[in-house]
Image 1 (cartoon, rainbow over the protein chains, first blue to last red):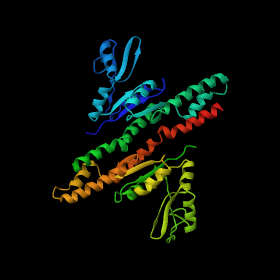
Image 2: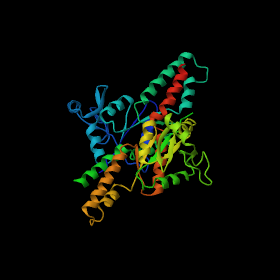
Image 3: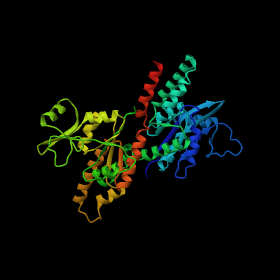
Image 4: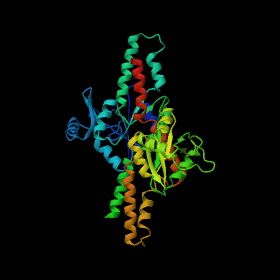
Length: 205
Length: 205
């Protein structure tokens, strides 16, 4: 059984991660499992356990944390939210790809525990556009430009932790780039080699 | 100017590197520079210097070696053959991709000097087919199988030095996989990041 690929879609807030993720799942030839989060908040009307979230008690969540079973988590307005490792592990082991959409802080935590994933950083339109956006129309105060440049510098520093930078100039283009990445990730030697080695070991035994 | 990508196409002898390379260059949407070798042998009828080979004297070739300007070289029937670094460097710096088709020994030498390339290992048909080929029809002598298994083991060990494993089950499929790899290599953070950093430095200056 060939192990699935963990695809982590991340990027600065406001870049359009959610939109790209939804468009990706609407592609007819895509069959990812979406990584389901765990939370201690109450289910809302119509929300289904194991589909929208894994709904657990505070005790259960804290046991997961204590056992090192959360890839990342945060507390927000009195409730825990996090990514359970076991669900992702089992899905990958069953040969299915998993997509995790997550903010930059979360992605870094996940990477520490699952460095074998494909880490994609979604970026605002390309370099030329970024430069234009930063400098503006030349009418901007120096202070405004400085602030934008330091924000961009921080984003670019984040990017260094990822494998791929995908420009979100148009959602359909970003989706195609991500589909290409997944296709090509399956050809990477570090994913293919374990199978070959296993086969050889079986033949030599 | 965005630097080109060095694509190194390699693999065990007999796997079909040359056929795949030729098919790749026939693709309408491919615009690689083919890496031109340097040699001390005499040009044959119709061969053009700087197109088929860089034809040089023995002295010139040995000066290149002494200056560390050969990515790899070998002597064969009294003549030197090798890959000059400068030509590749200049082509990449001009923003053009370079394809180098080379045997496994050569590829490893090139990788030491240009680890930033995309190293593709062309493999015989997939795992199932390989296993079948190794075991044969069950009528093979144990000795024959053992020999095949050790040959395959050696190939798989070589593969570990590469970035991608591309199965050459059908030439057109292998060509498409390589085209996908090149597309996606351009999205890799280590290729994109230097441009962003340069832009930021210019803006901060």
